[in-house]
Length: 609
Image (cartoon, rainbow, N blue to C red; front, side, top):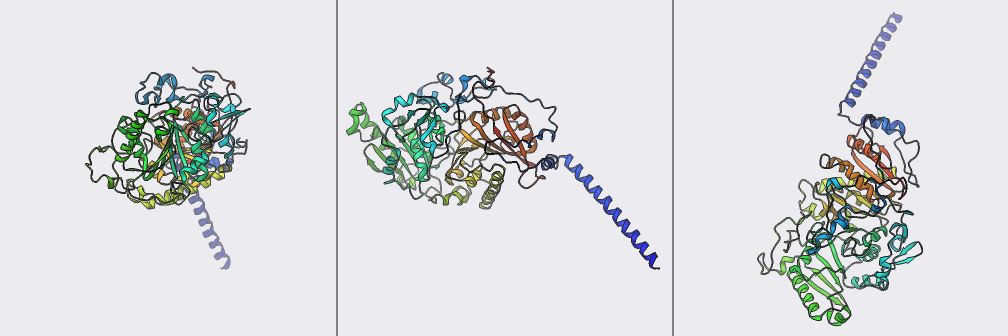
């Protein structure tokens, strides 16, 4: 009896075992079918990545580990034709497509139109790689880069002669030295900033974001950095040879730009302080149009610093070699426009005047139909290629909001979020976005362990959202240019309210900067955003133009998009690696990391033009 019972139990257990095995086989068959179906797109890539080792670290010399190759076999790219991009001619070493001097001279000079952005049509875009000059080296680390730039990186000596007595720049052997001087502060930017700080609360974090119009080599912004003020500097191309290029080689935020006929590419109420030091902008002309544009981007309670002519003209008209009547009229016009804008002159010392914008500008005008005031009717944040008008941006309902000091401002709820000004974005959604970017950046630091070491000073986020990437990466060793594409939701105002800086841009066109000006480029969902809008090839060639040799790239996007991107990169002298999402291989979003190879003029440099 006992034997019969045991035999029956064994048969039962065997049946259960067979049932489990058959069930598992069916489950894995269905899982494989699901992965092939597209609902789990990228999982096969992720599984293969797991086999080859997903923890790929970029070495200190910026080469990938040699055993991290072979990604192309994961998804069949054998039929994808890889175009090998040749180097451009050496004459394009410092090419700025939308600020090309030859093209600029075909446009009117009125209102500085010829110095504005004028991009080449599609058929004239270069399809080659911009070479670095011979002898190019990685810039010095900050803060040494503030004072020294390798001569080979920007081999232009004109400013050393033209601005010799003003202490802009000096040539010493194989480097340029920047003593920190300027036209209005030949004794150094530090002493000049101390003078401003006696009136403006720079030290307590109230002033965090600054705008320098006509910046020269950006010494004002360079020396404000140690006071925890981040400055967006701009100047036109070729007005002073390589001035913006020098600024970026020094590790100072700057773009090529001009106050002309088009609005500045910044949102309203972006800056705590704006500055002009002998910037040659005719503030008193055009019915105050340029001052009105500064007013648009200046926060209520913000400061405008004007240093140089016509301030204190009575004592300086002879040295300036200008008629005192002209200078008197110019200063009178400036002060009349300032009064119209509700700016109060709070200081005038030497050749420097400081104005402060009222917290609630409407309080000094009395009514919406105040005499002499024409209000702008368009959205003050809709500025891309929009004509600058002679009108005053009306104060918003939260005009008198007081911003928290930095760094508290970085992670506080921005006023635009708190007031519901961004459709569909609640405070909870904003906070969740912050949490996600802290998680993403921690994953990036595991991939590239020198990310926040100081190796990368100039960083760009090509699709910045709310600035979460920059906020999570925040460090005195680096700064981030937060770009909000014109196709994306308009969040740039939020970025500035966090105490960060950025710019509007359309990535179907070239960026307003010199070649080799960024150490690291990050892009989240950028190629999905521009899918069917413009060629991926053009975006990637522009990234290559503005990225330094041995600079790094981090792309986060859907796997099918990244594989198309990776095919193009295959012909661009970049080393690449496709990575899993930090949450594991089943997430269809992946990370593509890359390092641009070092090469200079003459390295197989065959022109394609």
